[in-house]
Length: 437
Image 1 (cartoon, rainbow, N blue to C red):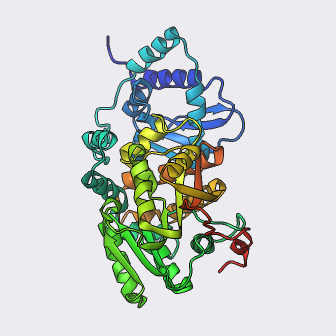
Image 2: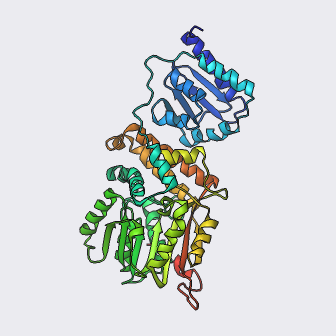
Image 3: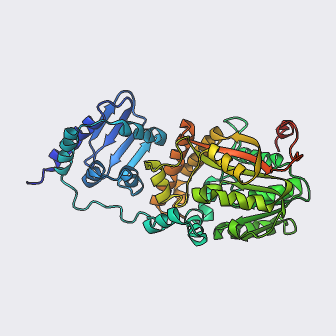
């Protein structure tokens, strides 16, 4: 069969689009590789998709890989202009498509007849995560594999993170008093909220498991007089925290180690324990051991706060979203339901005192991170490639929507070692809600 001329390829593409978006209740503008535009749906389009080549269009239509559309975006084969959040809602429409076998065959036949560009890019320079390592993490996540996974995400560049995080580089959910509050203040709120929940006192020993860039351990020392220790598996974070401790003159109160939590050998050494945004990396099979270690490290009467992301009631399933996150963002990321997390904690002999949901707070945090990253696009390219920039932009925007839609949650769970006649927290929460710092 002879290849179709370019004009015929455009008509074939338009026919495919009209069918795929026949029942679309939104509005979208699609720009094809020859510059022609196709307007679909009703109303004014909030965004437009641009296919840079006939091959890019053909690959998306014919691919059996559910990630092909998003991969084409960060590979530069497709551009998204306008409202990224509206564009991400396309997944609902595409997931709801009900095409008969005959219709699928007809659309595929049309796509095969589109003439691909001879010089079209295949996006081969896009970053890839080793499939074998992801498989190993899923089967038996060792300390070395976890270290590599953490390095993959957190050792991008300290300067890249500094472009869009707050001034203290807190890479976790902020705590907003209202939607208009600044990210800087909301992150200070969160640091203080955690210390209040822990009822942190001067001289107490605090361990932060997965301390990031050290904001919480420094806050605990400076604002509450605690003796704080942090552990991390990221070399970049470790180096940054070490320099920050010296700059702020906290050598006598704050320390950081490059250490896996499984290598902490001490018995009942810490008065207070905290883990913020770390247990998502542990692996579902390792959660009982993780909480057992936390229980061993905590002194009687001490408090442990676990702050982490959870899945909805269906649990961690293989979806387009989870596959994207595991392949390109968090190779070791796995989420459990909040109910199961509490059961595992209780199985480790913890008594749970308080559970607070922060889903709306994380949606606000992520949207602000995306806004800041968008504003610093050109600067970001000094530290990462355009594909990596697009991965982060897409990942954070998609996560914001997951929280907004209630598909993902995040909870702070406050617990202590179960013991008779133990009363490690006040009778009410009144002490938590004094004026913020």
